Length: 355
Image: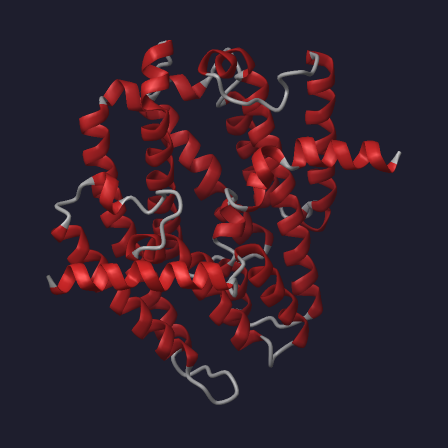
C-alpha cells in the first residue's frame, strides 16, 4: 500500500522532476506572504498556518493545471516526442487522478471558503486552467488570447487569490505587486513559447508564438524582460518606503537589500546594452546559467527578497524560521558547487564590462 502511494505521488505530484515546486507562481512569489505579514502587521501562529495551507492548496492546484494540460496534450506530446504523465494511462484513470488532486486542493482551501472573493477567483482560475488545454475552447490555440489567459491563470489570478484569502487590498501595494507579477508572467510564458516554437510550427499548433513569428516574438520578449526589471525596481522602492526603518537585531537589512538590487539592476542594463539585446545572451531562463540576468530576474525575487523578509519576521515569531529552512532546502542556497558557479559567472560578467 505504501509503495503504491509513493509511486502515485512520485508520478503525478512529482510531475516532470517535481516541477510544481519550481514552476509555481506562489512559490516564486512567496515573498507576498511575508510582505502582507509585515504590512498588516500579523505575526500570529494562525497567519503562519493559513500561509502553509495556502501553499499546499497552491501546489495541488498547480499540479491540477499541469496534469490537465498533459491530459489534453497526450497525442500532441507523442507527435513532439515529449514526455507526458498520462502516456501509459487510460482515460478513466487520468480523470480519476485529476479529480483526486482537485479534491485535495479543495481540502487545503477550507480555511478560505468563507471568503466570497476567494471562491469567485478560484472558480475563474479553474475554468481557465481547464479550458486552456481542453476542447472545445482550447484557449492555448487562440493566439494572443491564449497568451493573456495563461498569464492570468498562472500569475495574476493566483496573486489575487492570495490577496483575497488574507483580505489584503491595500493600495497602491496591490497594483504595484500585480504589475510586477503580470510582467514576470508574460516574460516566463514568452520564453516557454520560444522554446516550443519550432515544434509548434512543425505540428501546425496555432499558438500566439506561431501567429507572431519568431522575430516579432523575440522582440516582444526582449521588451517584456526590460519592463519586468523596471517593475521589480518599483516593487523594491515600495518595500524600501514601507520597511526602511525595520531592522533585524538592529541591522537595517532592507538598506542592504536595496543596495544589492540597485547594483544588479544597473549591471543588467549595462550587459543588455553590451549584448545588444540578443536573446541568447540576456535570457534569464538559459539552463545552467548564473549570470546577472538570472540573478535579477530569478535569484533575487525568488530567494534573496523572501529570505530577507523572513529574517525580519523571525524575531516577531520564531516559527517563521521554518520558512527559512524551506527556502534553503528548495533553492540549495549553500551548495558549494552552486556558489562557485555563481562566482565564476560573475567574474566573467565583470571582466566583460571592463573590456
